[in-house]
Length: 254
Image (tube, rainbow, N blue to C red; front, side, top):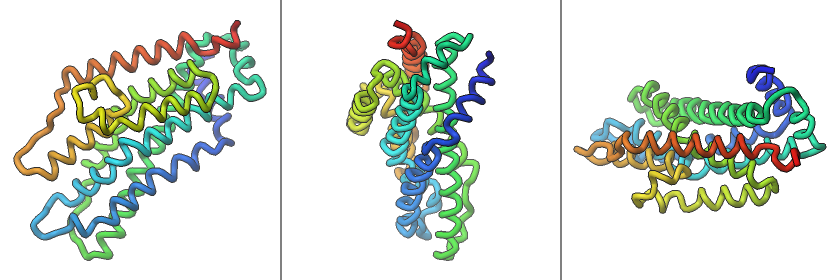
C-alpha cells in the first residue's frame, strides 16, 4: 500500500473530526487583533503599513497560537487511533509502521497548510475591509504576504516533527500535550538567547520578530544567518522523525 493510498484513508478518518473547526479560530483571532491596530500603521509618513501590520499579526501567531493549535491536532490524530484499538488494525495492514508514522506526519503538515491558508486569506479579506473603512489607498502586497506564509510553514516543520515525536513517545494524551505546551511557552524567552538555534519551538516566532525589527527600524537588515540555521533545522527535523518512526506502535507491538 502506497503512502498516497494511506493518506486517502487518513483524510477520510479526520473528515468527521473536529480538527478543521479548530484550525479556523486561531488565525482569525490573530488577524482581528492585527487589523484592529491598522490606524497605528496607516500614516502619511509610513509607507510599509501592510508589511508591519502583517508581521505584527504573525508574531503572536508564530510564537503561540499556531504551535498551540498544532499540538492539539497532534494529540487528536494520535488519540483517534488509540480509541477502539484502531492502531492495532492499522499495524495489521501489510504496511511498515514507519510508513504509517510518516503518513500521519504528512497529514499534520496538510493541516498546517490549511491553517496558514486560512490565516493568509482572512488577513487579505479583513485588510481590504479595514482599508476601505479608513479610505486608505495603499495596495496590499499579496506576494509579500504569501512569501511570509510559506516562511511560517517552513519554520514550523521542525517544531511539528518534535511535537509528533513527543506524541508518539508518550501515549497518554494529557502527558504529551502538557510536555509540548511546556516547550512552547518559554519560546519567546529562548528566542532572545543563542540557544534559539536548537529550540525549534521558537523558530517561527523568532523569524517573525526578526522581520518586525527589520521593517520597523530604518537601516537594519535581518540578523538571521541561513548557516547554521538551516542545517540545525534539518538535523532536528530528521532526528525527531526518526524517533517517531522507530517508536510508532511500539506499545501495541509488544
